[in-house]
Image (cartoon, rainbow, N blue to C red):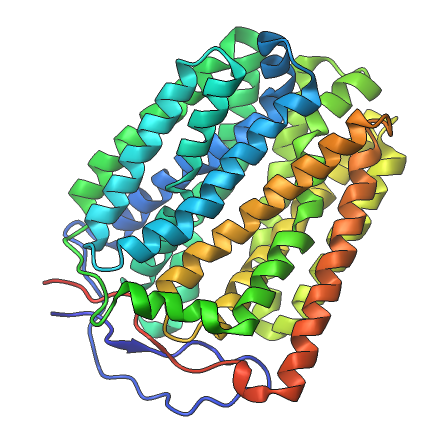
Length: 429
C-alpha cells in the first residue's frame, strides 16, 4: 500500500490541533501521470456542471415545449438539487468501502443513465423524475474526485490539486451551460442532455485508463462517516452554505427568462450573458480560495455580504441589459464563497472526510433548490422578474445569521471546532 495514512487539515482560527505528525508516504503515481489523471476527473466535473447549470439557460425553451409556466419549469432545477441532497450522503455512506476508481466510474454510469433518459422524456413528471436521478451521483462524484486528486500530490499542494479537479465545473459555467442554452434555443433542448450523457460516458473510459485501482481509506466504514453528523458545527456549516448560497441561485435560475421578458434581449444573446456570469465564477473561485487561506472566517462573512449586495443590485439593473450583464459577473463572482465554506466544513468534520466532501455539494444544491423555489414563488405571486434579487438578499442575510451563531458557539465551546483528520484515501499499489 502507498498513499497518505493520515492527513491533518488546517485548523480553524483559535482551534488547537493535538497531532500534526505525518508519516513519510509517497503520493499516488497514476500510470500516465498526474496531469492526465486530473484531466479525467475534471472531464467528469465538466459533464456534471453542464448537466446542472444548463437548465438555467434552457428554462424558456423547456417551459414552451412542456406547455408550463417558467416558474413551474424552474421546479426541475429543484428536483435535480433534491437528487444531489439525497444521493450525496446516501451513496457516500453505503459505498464507504468501495474502491475509489470503481465508485467514480459507477457515478458516471448513473449520470449517463439519468441524462440520457432526460433527453428521451417529453412530459413534465417523467423529466422531473430523471432530473432527480441525474442528481443522485453529483455529490458523491465530486467528493470522491476531490479526495483522489489530493492523494496524488504532496501535502502542501493538495488545494491546488483539488482546484484543478474542480476546473471542469468552472469550465462548464463558461462553455458547457451556455452551449447547452444555445442548443436548446436554436435546435432542441433535449440534445443538451444527450450531450451531457455523451461526455459522462467518455469520462468512464478516461477514468479506466488514467486512474489506477484505488482502495478506500483504511478503517473507512459507514459508521465512521456518519460520525460527522454528530457534530453541531458540521450542521451549522451546511446550513450556512444551504441558505447563504441560495441568493446566487435565486437570480441565476431566472436570469435567462428575466433578460428575455424584461430587457427584451433576443434569446440568441442570452448565452453570452451566461458566459459573463461563468467568467465571474471562474475569477471568484480563484480569488476566493486565496483569500480563504489568509482569513477563513472573514472570507465567509465578506462573501456572504457580497452575494446579498449583488443579488439586491439585480433589482435595479434589470431594466437595462448592459447593467444586468455587469451584475451577472458580480453575481457569478459570489461563488468565491465556495472554497471558504468547503474548507470550513472539512475543518469541522474530523475524520469523516468523504461524507463531509459530499455533503458540501448537498448543501450547495439545497441552496440551488431553495433559491429557485423561492424565486419562482415570488415571480408566480406577481412580484415581477426582479423579485429573485430580493429573495437572494434575504437568503444572504439568513446565511450570515447562521454563520454568526456558529462562531458564537465556537467561542463558547472551542473543542467543537477542529480535530485532526485521517487521510481520505489509501491507494493500492
